[in-house]
Image 1 (tube, rainbow, N blue to C red):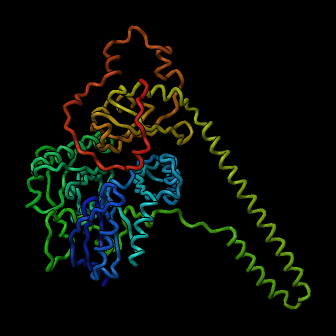
Image 2 (cartoon, helix red, strand yellow; image 1 turned 45 degrees about the vertical axis):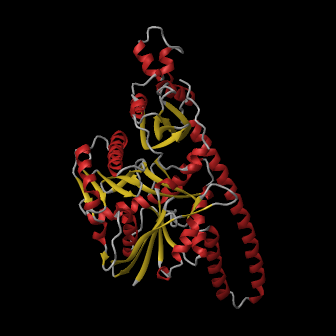
Image 3 (cartoon, rainbow, N blue to C red; image 1 turned 90 degrees about the horizontal axis):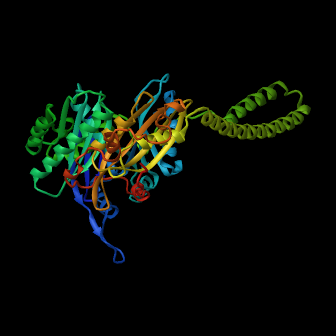
Length: 536
């Protein structure tokens, strides 16, 4: 019988669930939460002391010797949708790491990267969803548990643990479906297609009466479905909606979702996957759904789709030095047996072998230097061979984007993904998510494909805006096919005034939107960017 402790936390509290597993059967022993204690040093503003609060919680003897599984909330994880060239499964880890390093402009030793393959076989382009956690954050968690003489067995992505629990409770899962898990003033929204999570959103609810919170949650669910319809669902209609918790707490929410989304909605009891005896059931049961999913996966030996402690790596390669050593060992044994009677020649053979080893080491160093030079040459050749006119491509993109009053580009990265093709990564802010639909329809054509896998709220200059991340896949085109070439380098006088107004001011009534709360994002990434208006 093994004991498993599932933990997660936010800026308000630490949540835990202690369970025992025996022959695949999971029994809950205790679960609850502990508020974080605020501390202040040197007259600074008080901040939550999660390390001290966690140390105080785990000092209880009931947690001693348990396997620890930690869940990480969406705000701490960077999600990237990557379009990769054809590759075998064992080649994906290296390709994903290279693409993540290129997009985030950070060294690989600063990142913990795991990924979920979404589509594609080795003979076609591969699409994956990469989850990135700052290595400093991961080391901080590991060192804290080490000081308490505990070692986390896994560090997983919290929304994926909820999705795993749903697939266990509903074996024949409708597709596509939306999963909502409310945790206090925060809610995780996950979209599943064919049982695979492809879209994640984390929203913050206002500190207001319950009716206002439910209205806000229903509105965010509608926005999630709207964003997914333009990028992930490909015209499919939402088939079902699930809410984790008890019927008494979330029955009204399920009814509102069914009415506004025009789809069936159901409340799922997370305790259906575990055995609960003589344990007091806490309020807001849905906030422990991820913990139940984590302990059940750990008890059954199922590998989480994302585990930052055990990320997917390429298979270990047989080192040439080991092969050489094995060959030399075999030669030495055979030579020792065959030449036992010729002892006088043994010293000469040993000296010759030593010289060969030295020569082999020199050759290995030369091969490594040649390989590095070859990689550089191939990279330059690939770049030259793309034949994409990036200046014309970016100028064409600038003319098709909405005006700077409604859309601001914070970061733009153009990369070459293969001969005759490339990709452009856009990160910016908009006043209303509907502007993204206008942006995508303006960019998309027969040689461009655009997707917006992630959009979330943030505050910028005291005003609520929407941050987005879009990827544009471009293919080579003739110079005459660009918009500037068709205009002759200047805008003709006979261009309809309607098109000129559409380029300057998108038809979006953004001033009527409510002032939403800021959605959690990676603060370190946001702090490095200063919004710059895009040239029209």
